[in-house]
Length: 414
Image (cartoon, rainbow, N blue to C red; front, side, top):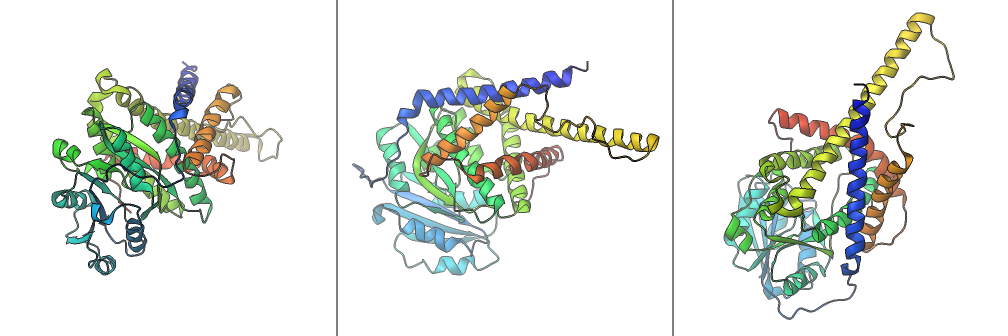
């Protein structure tokens, strides 16, 4: 029975390699379809669009967010902006009030009920064919909306178009690691688009046909991840979601490990619980690659990280215990033989080629994601930060999310 842990470990490594190779093949088959437009474009027709900006204690960021919407290269008479104060206790309402004289801006104030209730208030007042959301800590590129709407112009079946979410220049190592991660997210979103398997419609500037909500109902609380649940709901109802890789949105990101930990705990908790809510669709062929690839891949990723972390802790525990026994038996001594502690991926029994494939796939995803996000295809120190910081900390927020799920207790928003 001693071989079972190694069988499990090799299985997770194999599945990781399989996912990386599968995504690489998807890229090679579709890379000619990836177009990054640098110049301004014109549409044959400019449909009316409403952008809802839910706010809760965002006085420090909301002004920049609104200014970015007003700077969009889109006819002002076709763009409606709803600013919704969800019971803020700071100066958010004062900032919003500065924009009440703009003809295409409406401001609302309500009791705090959570982001999904603010979005639903926007839905109730929306009279346009298209509606989108912009998080109050994000800013849009001037060409983002017109590029997104061009996808609707050429694909009548499109029901939601998601942008490429990036970050500002990092101010420290923690933000540097996230910048690399967001670039990888751009690549992953595009590959999932090709597979018809996008599982999140990001709060920063996803644009929907309002028909989605007319048909499927409004946003739900969804474990504080309403942007994930609506994507799940769309997938199981065969509503097409597309990724517009050159529609850029810049979002603020945590600047400390503590803030990052809280944010990612909430995200992973949302993934676990939304997936549990939709568990009946997993491996059902009728739901396509969303059920056959996206959800299983997420489950395997969470399980693999937890398993590998457990092995590290157990290996470290055995190492410490053996040393304790040794000291009790023969006393303390400094020896060149430090024991058999085997940290993480440095297991000499594992195939180096498999590990190189996994990390090679991750690095390629970051590199090409950066290129799609308007950057250069080159290595950077941010990639090293990502590999180190996320490898060390990710197991902790996954453990917390699992524990919170078992206790049926949602993590705090902030």
